[in-house]
Image (tube, rainbow, N blue to C red; front, side):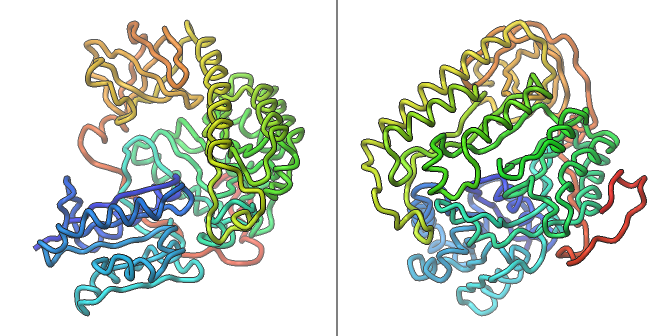
Length: 487
C-alpha cells in the first residue's frame, strides 16, 4: 500500500526550498503527497531563528501524539535547523518521534524512515558537514510559475545574534554552470520567475575564487529563454559591489527589487553585532542602487532591542529608516538564541522597552510604506498572478500577484479567465501600507505556459542538477556561448 506524507515548513526561504527537496525525495521513494494532515508520515522542517521555535515544535508534536498512538504505522520526522541544534534532545522530550535529521543530510530522510520502521526504534542522524548538495536532489516544486534556485548553502559571517552558521555550516558554492542548468530547466518547463537563494547570496563565488561571479550569474540569467523575472535573496551590505548594481540595471529580466538586511542604524550596535559595515556605507549602497534603478523597491530586516541598545542607538535606527525610505521592513524584537555570542552579552533589555521601541519603528515604517504605495496610484503595472497570497480574495472576487518590483497587487479579473501563472497589466487605484489594489479593468492579459501547467495540476519536475558538492580549485573553462562568463 502506498504511504502518504505531509511536510510542515517553518522559517526562511531556504527551508521552503529544502522542503521541496524532501517532497521530491519522498515521492521518488514511492510516497504520495497527502491532501490532509492525516498522513502516514508527517515531516517538520524546523527553524531555530524565530522566537519560541522550540516551544512551537514541541507543542505541535504534542498535538500529534494522540494520532500517533491511534495509528501505530504513522511516523513523525523532524528536520531542519532546530533538529541540527537539538539533536537527540528531540526524542528525549518527544519519544514518539521516529526520525531526527539535520540540515546537512536531507537526502537521508527516506532511508531513515525505512530504518525506523524496520528497527522499530527512533533514528537520530545529524551530519556535521554537508554530504550532498541539496540542489542535486529531486524536488516537488510548489509553484508552476516561480522557482527557488539555491546558488550556495551556509555562511562565513560571524554575526553575534545569528545561529545559522553553526547550523548550516561554512558557505559552499555551486558552480555557475550547474546553477544555470537548473534555471534553464525550470524555464523550459514554463517557469517565468526564479529567485536565486543564498544565506549571503552576493558573496557567491568566494569558494572558487571569483568575486565577480554573482554579477556574472545575474547577467547570464538574462540570456535564458523564457525566463521573465529574476530575484535574489539575501545579500549582505559588506559584499554589495557596483558590478552587481550594474548587472541589475542592465539585465532586463532582473527585477527592480532589493531586500538587504540593515539590522540596526546604530554604528555602535552594528559593531557589537559584527556586521562589518556602518550606516553610511549602507545608505551609500541604496543611493547607488536608486541612481541606476530609480523604481527599485527596497526592503530590509531590522532587529530592535539588541543587548546594550540605548535610546540614542534606537533613534539612529529611526533616522536611517527615515533616510532609506524602505518599501517594506521586516522588524524583529531581539531575543537571545542559545549558542550565539549575543546571548551572553550584558545589558539585555527589558521586554517592555523593546516592545515600545518596536511599536515606534513599525509606526514609522508603516507611514513610509503607505506614502510610497500611495505614490503609485494611477500607475500601470505588470502582475504575475499567484495563488494563496490574497487571504480575502474569495470574498472580494479579486486575484493577487506580484508586480515586477515585488509589491503585492490585488486586482479584479472581471470576466476574464485569468489563471495563476498568467501575466496581466492593471492600473493601481489605491495604495495601502502592505499592498496595492487595482479594481479597474484589466488592460492586458497574457496566457502563459506557466498558467497552462498550473491549470493542469502539474509542477516542474525538479530533476537533479549537477553531481554533488562543487569541487575545489579553479573551475574548469566553459564555452563562452553557454552563459557569457567563465564558470
